[in-house]
Image (cartoon, rainbow, N blue to C red; front, top):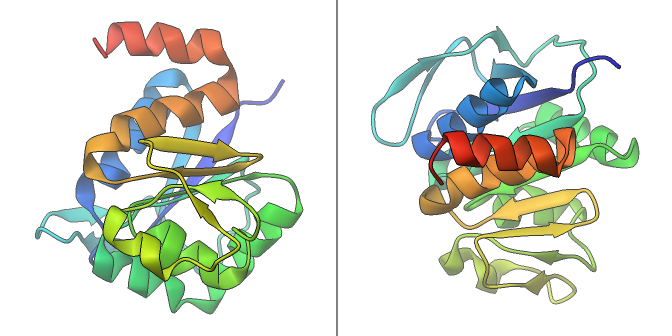
Length: 183
């Protein structure tokens, strides 16, 4: 069986913890993670930490098992403005791949696309009032509804990464990693 893969898309203003925790956890578990920069290879987080992406999103041709969208107010806004992000996320959703978002990204990026319609999700609490009436907010750290995975924010990023590990590789892999990480 080929290795599972995930794409993490970073836009300027992303929340650093929400990006690096899932990337680190998934890579430790053996998932092939590609970090793609929306506007280039160097992306600056919400708190001034600069990251170098593996590639630019523009022109990326690989197929992935999951797409992960970190939050951060400005980062989520930048992702939501990208036609390329919207097309890629919709395509992955239609192909039955995992679509994961944390913090502001469920409400700011996914909800306007209609991907969250009739779903149970979580997001950064201040964003819940902007959700459409047919989306149910659940006040939990991580919520899975079908192949949509959402999480609340920076403090839930490790749980988010572990849930993604479980969905991609199974409960045993996630439990083993959880033990090693002392979670």
